Amino acid sequence: MVLVDKDERAPQDLTRVGLEEEWEVRYWCARYGVTGEELRACVLEVGPRAVDVEQRLRGQGKKIFSNTGED
Image 1: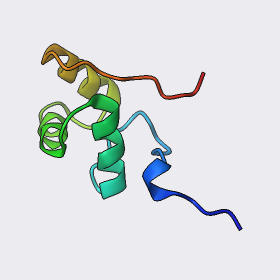
Image 2: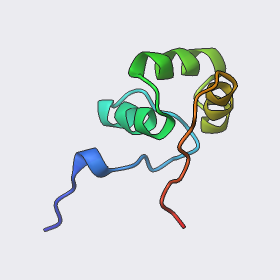
Image 3: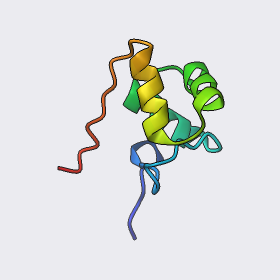
């Protein structure tokens, strides 16, 4: 049996910022270095596409941590 640490999981679809699950919000907040409120406001403004969210946050002067560990 494999135990899954819910705090360590990543969304299956990294092209869309999901706000439905709290663990997913935490993932995106950590990835982009923003609060939940900032993330939700950004998604409402530009939509859920991760590239659009990242571009908007960069435009606001946020230092985005985009290393996904996939290298």
